[in-house]
Image (tube, one colour):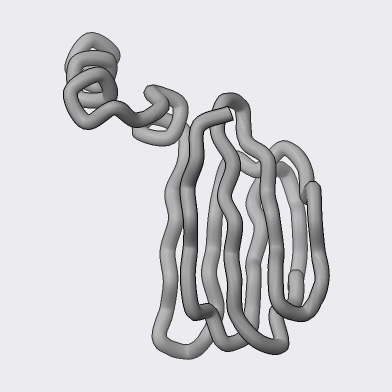
Length: 88
């Protein structure tokens, strides 16, 4: 399985950690769940930036809030307009 994840990550030019350790769910109710978060690097009502092992996630929108951060699982609420994933 690990070998397949490595090959897929290389093929689509994405972090292997993103493919194997992280789950990102966006629900139409205005909540997003992400696992594997290490640190919140920016937080205001329009932007939430999160750091993971070898990539980062930026959430942009309106009235954004963080409901919880427990054991690397985080919930972002509000009107989510865009989610950007970038390699660190």
